[in-house]
Structures are given as structure tokens and as C-alpha cells.
View 1 (cartoon, rainbow, N blue to C red):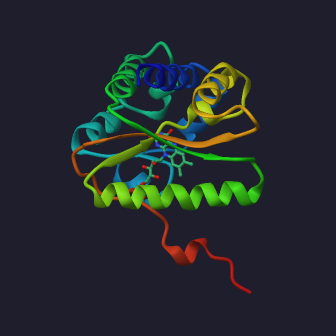
View 2: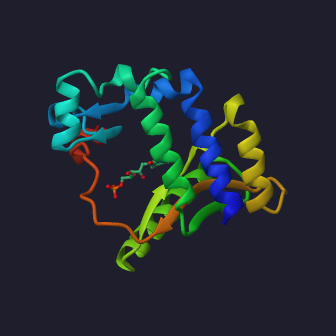
Length: 182
Ligand SMILES: Cc1cc2nc3c(=O)[nH]c(=O)nc-3n(C[C@H](O)[C@H](O)[C@H](O)COP(=O)(O)O)c2cc1C
């Protein structure tokens, strides 16, 4: 457990400290109801306090992307605390990494998510160490050394698992807007 807590923590902190990678998340961060409803995907942040701080310019995408800001420092601390408080991990591996394996992994992950929800547990992906850009290489290798048999097996999803307060489902686009017809 401690090794996985540390790997997931270090991976997410390194991602936040890699400006190009962190900026991808910032650009997908929606703060407040109006931004979330305009683009119901990405990382949504709502609630009266943060929306007010957003309106007065204290908590903004710019502040989140500025490593010298107090907001950035606070975010690092919250993320670190979350990773280190993890009481369980669940992961999905595949024997190889072709499209079929990836889709099968997604389906398996959804089944795990549904079952854990039915069992009263909560899951949160910690997917940074699964990514394939240079700053993640050490974490990617560490997670694969620990969770695979080393013969090309691929960790597709790694999530923390535990008891958590209920949250509403994430915002999402209506299904019709995601389907291609004809
Ligand atoms: C492939 C994938 C990777 C994700 N990685 C992370 C992550 O590293 N950290 C995180 O907080 N959320 C991550 N998420 C998003 C959360 O899981 C998101 O809240 C969830 O997909 C929405 O759940 P819901 O449909 O039950 O509301 C990821 C989602 C997917 C599909």
C-alpha cells in the first residue's frame, strides 16, 4: 500500500510540475456552473465558496497554472493528502496493449466501478503513472514493476478505492451529442 501511495503521489505531483502536462488539465478545468454547463466534461469545480473566489479573481485557471501562486500550493497539498490517505487500490491489466485490449480494459473498469458502487465503496482513478510522456517514465516503470509479471503486461487503470461521502455523478454531455449516425 505504501509503495502505491507514494508512486501515485509522486506521479501526480510531477505531472503538476510539468507545465505542458499540467496546462492540458487546466484547459479542461471548468470553474462554476456556467462554465460547467457550457462544457460538461473535463474537471469540474463548483460550490459557492470556490465560485465566489473565482468571480473575484482569487481562484482561476491562471492561478491554478502558476506554480508561484498560493492556489497552486494549496492544490499540491490537497492532492498529496488524498494520495497518501488511500486505503485501497484497484487496477486493471491487459496482456498486451492493442485497441481490443484497451476497450476490454475500459469495459472491465466500468464493471468494477459499478460493483464497487453497489457495495457502497468509491473509486477515483490515479492515472498519471499510466501515461507515456518523459516525466512519467520512472513512475510508469515503478508501477509496472510492482503490478505486472513483466512480460509485456500493461496496467491500464489504477484507482484508489475506499469509503467516501456520496457525490453527484460528474456532469456529462447528452448521449445524442456523442453518437455518429449515418
Ligand atoms: C481513463 C480515465 C482516467 C481518469 N483519471 C483520473 C485521475 O487521474 N484523477 C481523477 O481525479 N479523475 C480521473 N478520471 C475521472 C474520474 O474518474 C471521473 O470523476 C469519473 O470518470 C466520472 O464518474 P461518474 O461518471 O461516476 O460521475 C479519469 C477518468 C477516466 C475515464
